[in-house]
Each structure stands twice: as structure tokens, then as C-alpha cells.
Length: 228
Image (cartoon, rainbow, N blue to C red):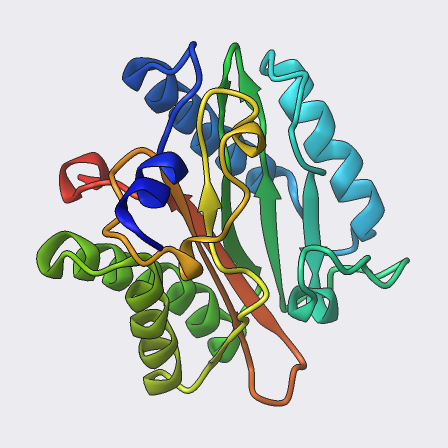
């Protein structure tokens, strides 16, 4: 990707605002926490998705630019474009993840995280490692000025060293004032420039090598100060 194309990929729309993007991110992270707090063993996945949708509505986040997802148990291995197996119930000791994309006024939020219920050491490790790989990748970008392509190669190594498989079908993407797709639809993993802060979403989807469970974490690409 030559420089002009790289510049085009990082263009923003007329309503772009740093404060607006950060507000959208903050509202997204708050909503993820609120949804997670309401998920309980015995819930059916479809009911959790309806609950998550209502949480967003109650927070004034009535518009989402991609479907609201809550994935339970064996559905945590599926890529976002794959429909969940219907009727999956969250067990007493289980794993789930949330993936939401609310619009806050003119700006896109996008975030996800994995959580556990009960006690299951490997599920807990998978959920923690998804976030850990995200932050390791983000710090590699900050410290080494890696391209998007090299960032995902780094993430793949980080996942493998922890014993997981990184799902290449979730390769990161642009985020902007809505809609980012009018500006750029390519993935972060295919971007050979050094990505700028507040322009990209890093997606980390880890799966156990036997594809029985997985975990997900995504957030905006930002410097350390935003995570303290």
C-alpha cells in the first residue's frame, strides 16, 4: 500500500472529533461492563442478546452499526460473520464474550471482551489472554511503530506462545465518525503503513486449538495513557 493509499485509508469524515471518538469509546466500555454484569448461568444466548440490546437502548445508544453479539460456550469459537448455534445455555462454569458497536451521536464505538462465570481455570486464562494479547500488540505498535500487517503477525505469535490460535478472520478495521465504510473498508492486518491512533480497532479472537472454546477482546488503538 503506497503512501497516498495509506493516507486515504486514514481519512476521516466531516464530523470527526477526538472528543467524540473518545466519548463513543467510553460509552462502549461502560455498556460492555453493564451487559456482563447481567449475564448469569442458565441464560439462553438469544435472551442475553436481547438483554444487551436493551442495555444499549437504556443508555441512549439506540443505533448500532453492526449486530449486537453475546456468545456463550461453544459459540465463542465462531467468527462474527458466522451465526451462533441456536439455544446455547450458559453453564454454571462457562465462558462468554460480548461484541457491540454502538453509535454515540456521530461517532462509532466498537468494543468487546470475554468473561467467565463460576470456576474454570482454562476458560479464565483464555479470557485474560485475549486482553493480554491485545495490550501486547498495542504496545508493540506504540514502541516499535509496526505496520498493521506486522501488528497482526506479532499478535499471532503472542497467541501461539500462550497456547492459542488467533482467528485470522477478525483482522481489525477502521473506525471513525459514522460510517467508516464510506472511507475505508480494508482490514488493519492488510494495512502496510504504521496505523495512527484513534483510527483503528484491534480485534483479538483466540481459540483453543481443538476449537471447543474461545475468547474475544477488541478496542480502539490508543497509547498507554488511555488505559491507565
